[in-house]
Length: 235
Image (cartoon, rainbow, N blue to C red; front, side, top):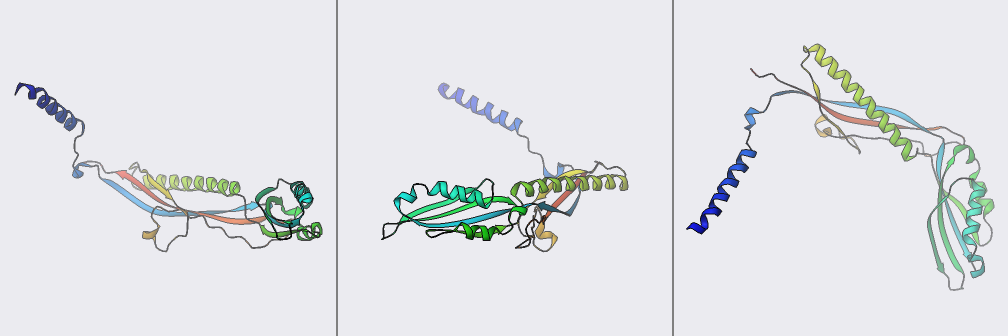
């Protein structure tokens, strides 16, 4: 029996320490709170003076012409607009005739003032064996412009919540209300407040087309659910 005594003693001590370090607080002892839940919606227009232009290139070349195709494409894209073009896709296959079939896609953000007749310019660059075509012109703001707008809108939400807290303290005798939770969410907003808890929506509306040299605007909307609370004084 003497060999087992130390083990029993250690087990007893460990259980006692654990119980002392982790007291169980009854739910009924939690501080009572007054809570106010409400919803905020703010929006602003985001302006952009650029558009994302996508160019498709299709070519059928012999081996000699294939060696210089990348340089030729880069030069011709600079002829469309002297900006930073990105090649987002480039594939090549050999046909039964021995010619190389090249398909490439390039994109760039271009100031709207430089998009005048860009489709015509692409057509003029095309020649037997290689074709340039404007496949898309997207006037949506850049990701950086949209994120900057969201930062601004969150600041607006915080200011509105602060104003609400000041009003509550003034109305109810300075009960020291504070922000318990603010939740933002992205995606479509469902109907009804109960389905909107903990959500934020950024909704963008922009025309499919816009005239060249246009300052295109996109509306960004931010929704938030807010919980304000104050601790009820104990009796």
